[in-house]
Image 1: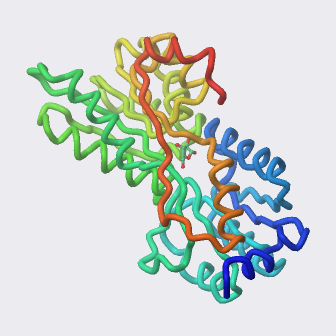
Image 2 (image 1 turned 135 degrees about the horizontal axis):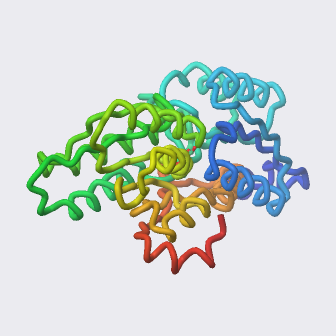
Length: 307
Ligand code: AHR
């Protein structure tokens, strides 16, 4: 089949709207809200017929949504897998139905990479490494143990697994850097606060908090302040995302360092959908570009922040 033939068979060339089924993780964080908004507005701009579902952080809901998109015979399915494992069966169903799947934001741990066309999103291990590098530099002259507590993202999710691994890899360079407690805060503000309260009760000396996202750090800040301590001073705080509320806390010196994770994946996703429908080859992995912010840099960047 020639390129022109496959193009003329595509829904866009046939004057039909491209239909895209998107199964979102949930609405757990400021990052997720910005991500959802980016997907909805880019789909509208691209003129796609978007079917959107919110899985409320439950894998079973995402699987149900994907199955309903298969039934509806959408042109493309995209989703951000809440956890890494357990997708092979439903992905095979999509493949058997001839519907291409694009992963956005989070990856799956499937051995068979023919089950999806591409994965668009951040390098979460690298984000963890960036957090670790900053800490190693801050405490390079430490002569005593530095007690770190960690608020992990959703258990089993790619960003929780990878941010933990990248951070651990880097802090291993200095044996004084010790993780004394590590627990999930589900990427939410409420859980971040609750778990930080229990960390503060259980441990007399906490020097550093590493939170896998801004929302958990923001919840933890409330707990730290309620305990009569100064966030950013008595306890140094590192987080990931760089959403507006996180950047505001950083500009106030309450968060010392933020690793950016860009939620604005909509335009790249719509481009990929167009290319897939047109039968073009696309790269198996599309990595999002991101930076980091100290408190000073957050203050400067804040006025121009889009999310
Ligand atoms: O998968 C990206 C992560 O999910 C973000 O860092 C976090 O805020 C969100 O909930």
